[in-house]
Length: 475
Image (cartoon, rainbow, N blue to C red):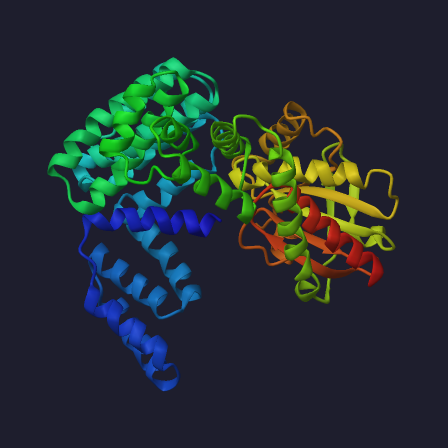
């Protein structure tokens, strides 16, 4: 995760330099050829490194190593560049990536202030990094309901495209905290900026800012301003078909079958929710005059979809030894996986900053409740890839579970090991994205691995339950 964030920051910084496309093309070609050709190319790079003088030359060589597939050498060289040019553009990018690891808004703001003082734009040249850093601070303050500070840092963003993107995120963050009036004001301001971009911007820029139109249209519809919302949907919002608020208004404007098709497809694919269900109910009642038969219709589709999904579960079964680990739970108790031998163990790697992880927790609660009286099934919710200190991660994880009614979850902390500098458990399981769930049988073998989260809670419960039952039978 840290490498991904660092690479993101470094890519943003490249706007200050033109990339050496010819060298990167050679690197790609050498990687494809492999063998002697790749070795010869790396030898040439080593010679170029010895002769390099300017920071840009060093960075070009560094990226050539990345493109050639030699990430080990590239990582080593990045540390050399960072030390040699400690206040240069490369160091600016590397240091900026630290802002993603901080959790509190005040911590992000303090970092931002010291960072721009150390790496002033007037000296190093402007970069999208400055806008991205301000955006991170603004979003953090919005998450803490501090509208004044969130607005202050929004206004520090210079690029109009970035400001639209940030306004969209900040507005939605405030709306999620039920600060609807403040959210609407920020989204409206974002639309006004988007108007300027749409008039003069390139196609990719117009697409980038279009999301703020969609968010503001949704906000208008959800706040009883139907006429304004419909006008915005039909004049400036490109990807409106996925909006439940738009589809609800579409019914009122005579587009009944359009709304029904949208909601019905979501239901059949397992992505329906309360909003799409409400659209279906509205259409059903409009066409039939009542809701007779609606619940049976929905139940029938759900049952058929889940039956089809379960048919393929057996083909997903694997047979791998489950790496052992020893961690502390939130109460300080030692949890060793091998001590749970003889039980089916479900591991759920998650984090408080991970949206899909949090969306999957209600389905996990339903599954935990289903097996709460089964002594042969154990669930471990392993918080990993913390941002900030281990102490803060412990506090945030425990608070999130408590605030959302998941107190019964056995919370285990996979914080960074001071010796290995890794989150040992998630690293041992080779996880490259969360949420990640593993079903381990009674003999200590991984039988199933699920990555990500999508679809309905009911589908997730049915799938995981089937995996648990198969793990029991195959133990």
